[in-house]
Length: 241
Image (tube, rainbow, N blue to C red; front, side, top):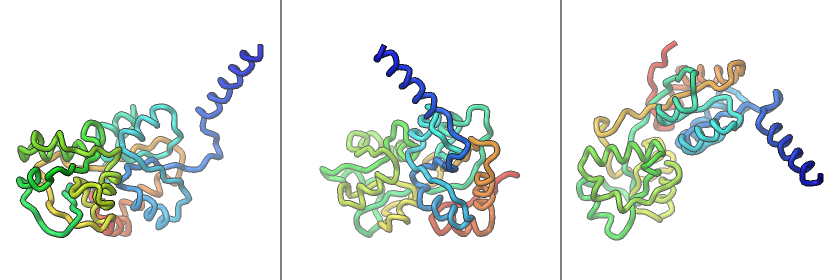
């Protein structure tokens, strides 16, 4: 009987945590590359929200498992669609892909395998994290992936990959242009836009009646929002009405 009572108690607890109470705070789940911008944008729009940052794939799985989120912003359209279900996707803005280094100076990208020596190349996980997927596509386009794929230091998200370089754990890392700017580290090579799929951030409204979500998206689409995007290294695009 004691075991049965405990089991019922656990089931009740699971039911309670799976249902979001009406008084819970507004939560924005954003790709890790957006954490600094999202916090600044929320403050500029005078919104009292909680910013939860992580890899787009990780956040999508958390939402699928029932994590309470009002807005999800992904760096990958496929993961946005995964989290959206029947909901609409909203295109927000773009980014660039760069090779950041632990010291100043431009390199010829073809020389990267040789320049790595015995070191590893920092990447967000190229199997499922958007920044890693873009990096893999770029190196495949340039004919370098075969030489580099076995020398990757895979990180759980793009900001972690940037920290590998910042901390000295890796001499080079592929990140978004916005991450290189945020970490204030040199850019050794800028990947041509045609070498990888277009980098776009996509929003999914997960709560239909939260004014903070609309206020945040409206701010991003404003002149002030576009200025802030540029300051953080993102590329504003026109959002459809």
